[in-house]
Structure formats: structure tokens, C-alpha cells
Length: 368
Image (cartoon, rainbow, N blue to C red; front, side, top):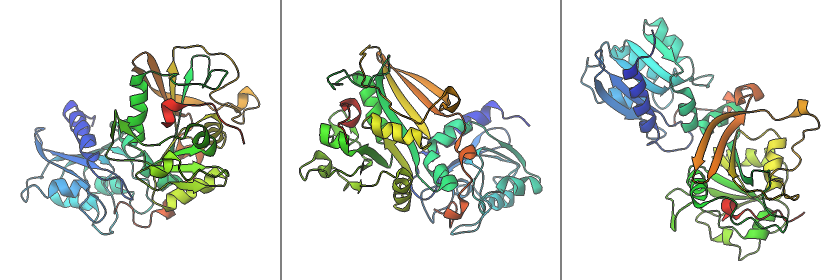
């Protein structure tokens, strides 16, 4: 049975509801219950560990029997797991729901399998509706479940000829105000923001996320990678969150530590060396490239060595979006091979699924 327009609209609403939930050890999930004629009966979302899941939250707002023959539209496959709460798949079956439309499969070895349970009970199930949008909402949680590390976004700004700065190292500003505002908004969506010590020493960035002169309510935790020490009066030490310092250049170890701290998404910026290291290590889950309509020439490249010796070794990307930002253009891309293809799932990390040496060129448009 094909997904109809009413169900598509309901999924759009469910995704809006999902974003209301807190980010953390549990995924953000939204749900909408539709009557057989397509009327919205109730809505719900997951409010954190130990609270009802989105489907159960929506069902709890209905009188007994009101969901008989209804359709549940959910952003993540209904779970098939008893933890702090019972299986959502069973709750939907017991409520008499006749159809379920969901966006993403639950990757958990224990919590997954809800779709099969629903089908076995005679419930019609459709999967994949608005999957890409749904994945963007919980990509940190998905990466943590599958790979046991945070989801990594690598960002840089460059001229059309691929330079991050002019020959003298200046780069303020390559991009315009609209693009810089977009960077700050995207920072505010991340759990952590990572830069190298070279950027800290050269630019003394605050690493806050700002809407104009006002700080966003959510601030990413600053992470500094590199062996050089950070001055005691550095701006980063006045950040709302105490900075995390990592002297190692082992990026997998850094991400492992951040994962253990509960950080699920990292926004990497601050210069070509660190960005290139993440790309070369195959640790960039998303790439944001802000393209400015300027030509700079010279040797201040936006990326340095990323481990490509021949064209056969190229890091192939899939473009998800081209976003006009004033005079600039943002390319949003991801590896052509997704995280499912790059590593085996790390479901053992989910103990209770769904419970809840040189100075780099200045890049102030991204690190202020």
C-alpha cells in the first residue's frame, strides 16, 4: 500500500514533533495517529529516558478503542524491546492500529524488529517515508548506535579556487554574513565543536554559537585537539562549557572519549589541517563546504593531504543539498558509502536501546 499525501503531511508533522524532544542517549522521535479517514487523532513525542516513547505518548491521549483501525505515522520504527518502557510495536497492536508508516529502521539488535512484529499481527507497514530528513534529526544517535562514536560534521569555507585564505593568511571574511549566520545556527545543533591548537593560538576563537550578539540557548562543548598548550587567558576558557583538551592526534581515540562522555555529534572547523585529518581518516560523516564567489590563488588550500594518491583513492561524496546563502553557496555532502557500509553496527554499545606544528590560515568566519 503506497504512502498517501495525508500520511506524508503527518510525517512532516511527526518530524517537527521529534525535534521537540531532548538530545541524549535516546533518539528524538515523533508520532501522529490518524483516523481511518485521515483526521489527526493525537500527537506525541519522546521526552527523554524513562518517559513514554512517541507512539505510546500519542496513544495515551486517546480514549480506549479510539485507535481502532487507525494509522500511526512515526519517525523511527516502533521498538520491539522492553526496557524502562514496553515495546511500542505491541502497544500499537493492542490499541488496534491497522497501519504504521515510519521513516527509519531502528538499528538496535534488541530494539529493532518492530516492523516484523507488526506485520505478523496483521498490521500494514510502510517504511522509508522522508527517511533522509528523519536521519538528519537523529544522525548523532544513529552513528553512536552503529559505530560507537559521535556523528562528525566537517565544515570549511573556501574561495571558488579552493583557498581558505589569501597568501598572507588573512581570510576575514571569505564568506558573507548570511553564510556566517548559517554556520552559527549549525553549531548550535551540535553537541561539541572541535578545533586544532593552531586555530586557538592564531585566532583565539570563542567557539560559541551566536544569533547576532545573542548566544543560542544550546552551546556546543568546545574540544581542542593538539599537543600545544592553550593560554590561560584564551577566549575558549570563558566558554559556557569547560573545554575538553586532547593532546593526542589519534582522532578515533578522541571520538571514543567524546562518545563515553555522551557526546553524539561533533562540528569540526578551524583550519585545513584538522579538517583534512578527519577526511583522511574516513571520519567525516557530513561535509559542509561554504563556497564564496572570490578567487584568491596562492597556496593556502582549504584542504591539504587527505590520503589520495590517485584518482582511484578519491573520497567520493553524494551531494544532499545546494543551499544559496546570500552571495555564497553551501554544499551539504556525505560519503557516497554511508555509515552502514563503512563499519559494522555497534549495537552492543546500546545497553538499553531507546530508553532513553604550523599556524593554520585564519578562518574567522567559522571559528569566532
